[in-house]
Length: 504
Ligand code: FE
Ligand code: ZN
Image (cartoon, rainbow, N blue to C red):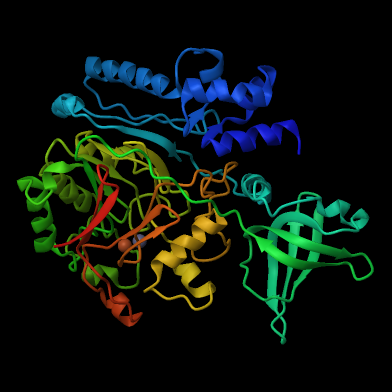
């Protein structure tokens, strides 16, 4: 393993993500020996940029974000105009917290929120979307996942596919899977490709693989038959997550998804009952300081066949206006964080950028608009929030899966360390130079929505939440024989590290 790879591995072990160029600086400053100093200075679980290392030796990246935030804020206060950040992702892979708004709710700054954005994909799709863009995208996917898989203890004697010819012993190779098929006898046949070449693989043990996932395989190569005999398949996975320190005071986050404002099936009364609960502050609601919404804020227009017959509000702007009015009703002390879903007014290819400024400005600047997916920290808990469109593909591809087992699908994503492990399914992927759908940092809380079901599981210390809906069954869902499980809410208590399920 190269020194560079060792440094990146060590940083990832500390949940530190760095800009690629920052690795060179770390190498100059002593490489692996410099990492303990970095951890001391910046803490674990953070994003370090080149500028953090060069310009601000004494400050943490978070300090920098905060400074930047406050200077932006003062600019905004001067102008009184809503500031919309348009971070060019080519320059900065990790965005700075977006706190935009007018002074109407300035008093909100006084609330003691402990919130930081770690990953927000505010990046436009390449204009061409040509073959080169996809090659760059898959190279990045391979690079990110191979780095994680390489860390697994099972992976020994790793060789590149081009060097297999000289390998006589048992070796490991890491590659992207394609052309998966199962023989009559149940043997798994597939092709594995890395940047140096490709090789046909045979795995008699069966198991299952999906096309485009990145895996490590352990086995022996037969030069004679030009085949790699697989003994074991290794996915990125992760080891048990230790939960973050408990919050000192009672504080909690409410997790919901798929509101679908504008639909005739929007369950208005039950939604209003939920808002009443938040407002009254009884039964634990007074500890709620965050409201997270996993996408499909509105029903949108033209999303499924004959949708117009089922729309109460047939103008998408009016749908968002209605949502903004509801949000106005939520106590000021609650920070609202939203990502878009496939019904929202952003491009459908993933990652989906945050909702555009024309929508944001309806919300008076007190809502945090992030991308789908996005990663953020609340009270030391890492949240990965993803709308979940790929659940529809995974449920069909993974043997013995169904919509009653959403948590198993979420576990699979964590195991493959990717939100959309297959390419060419129902989820279109934007061929960006960075794979925002790779799960670089294992979260403490993983949230999805989209399938309009409630599910909760704890998997190796990670809270897996699929966050229900506020929409009753549509005709389309009826036709697809799909029964939603609406108006359920998950409440994460940071004081007890516990999840409570509420029904409205
Ligand atoms: Fe939905
Ligand atoms: Zn959806």
